Amino acid sequence: MKFLYFSIYMLIGMAALAQPCPIIPQPNSAKAITEEFTLTEGTVISYNGVEIQPLANFLQADLLKSVGQTAIIGKLRVSGGIHLELVKKLRAQTGEAYVLTVGRKGTTISATSSHGLFNGINSFLQLIRLGQKNAGKKTIRIAGWEINDEPRFEWRGILLDESRHFFGMSTVKELLDWMAFYKLNKFHWHLTDEPAWRIEIKSYPKLTQVGSTGSFDDPLAPANYYTQEQIKEIVAYAGARFIDVIPEIDMPGHAAAANRAYPAFSGGGSSKHPEFTFNPGLDTTYRYLSSILREADALFPSNMVHIGGDEVSFGNEKWNSILEVKKLMNSQRLRDLIAVEHYFSARMADTLYKLNNKVLLWDEAADTNLPRDKTQIFWWRHDHPEQLKKALDKGFATVLCPRLPFYFDFKQDSTQRYGRTWGKAFVSLDKLYGFNLNDLQLSEKQQSHILGVQAGIWTEFIPSKAKLQYMLFPRITALAETGWTQDARKDLQNFYNRVAMHSRLYREAGIYYYERQNPKLTPEPLTPEQITDPARAQQ
Image (cartoon, rainbow, N blue to C red; front, side, top):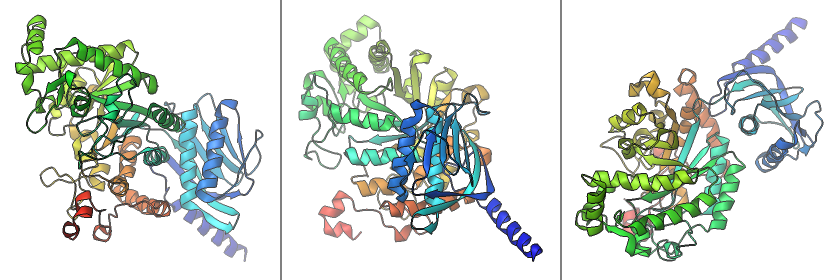
């Protein structure tokens, strides 16, 4: 009989040790232990410093929201409870690192910073939500774990374009919640472009009175924008989740919405992109844009502003015939329109530098000589690897966000009807997960300037919240793991298994997500054209 009990005990232990860790992104080190943690009504959440009490409150609120359990905040550590502790030192090197221990005697989350503790909390919440075993209406049991973890990259971001289609406060907050859940920490908010201007600027009210009307599909769509108070609310909501919010205010191109409101500052455009640019030959243009940037600076404490700087050639042909631009070229000895563009970027960057902001630009700016310590480059043109290497060779801190495989407006497979492709190339889950720096053939010195990775949710083909979800989930998981987990720890089949587990969370949250295994059974949401034209809905 003793031998039988011993055998059963060993089998249970072996099963526990063999189970995969369900967390996304995959931790650096995760060891299953033959114990269980029990969460009950009244489980105590304790902490060892007043500065981390908000984290205890966050955990308490999330447990109630996600699994219906009412925990109690207490200052004294108790057996069987959850303890958050700031420590002076961990073996890991980054401030985002954490240690999570889940066992019979309780759960402990340790870190050297509040951000690290927050990361550990989200790993613990994943274990709770994914591994719960109900032992009764008021009791949840989860398997034991010992986890030591830290991120690979400092920058793990998502860009959301709301100029082309506007989604609003609740959708943005939901996106921030899922970003935090998967330890993404940079929210790049694309608020201005050709279709519409989405940020209130009090010194220039027509930007929203006139410029916020329209969308990519409908130039007469009702005005939609964020007031400054709403932006402050979003920034605070993101900050509580350790997410920096970085606005993008496009210049000198992609300016059509602004130019509808204030045509005096327009530099013209082209037949395909009318009124596309600001006028770089007028001093009043720089005063106008500087005023806008000063208001933006007061709203975004990240001390980073993205000013675009991309695709200016789409609509700068009229610069050649503008008298003020000709005078500028003569006075500043600018040999061509590219030089004019760089002059413009340098002047606007200087405004932001004086406000103690870093200036963020797309990879066209790798050709400039802006100060390396105050400027970040975003490499987006996968077909121009020379721009990436140029930025890195110049010493610019660089974020990797190439269209392939980081643009989420691209189709996910051949069954998807609406979305972008590059030739026949899609952005599938496995291609995003398989992104590897080694494929870029960069030197060790070049790699040292890489800040991290970012996905772009451009919304020409994303007119609704349902389509936004469909294009984001589950690709957000591959983005998270690419940004956090070392390549040596990545395993595609293991990842697929974990994504399948997380799909239950999407169903519970009512998310319209893409099903990799059965894409034909998860048809994409209708586009505005299909909704208004029943015949197209059948295509």
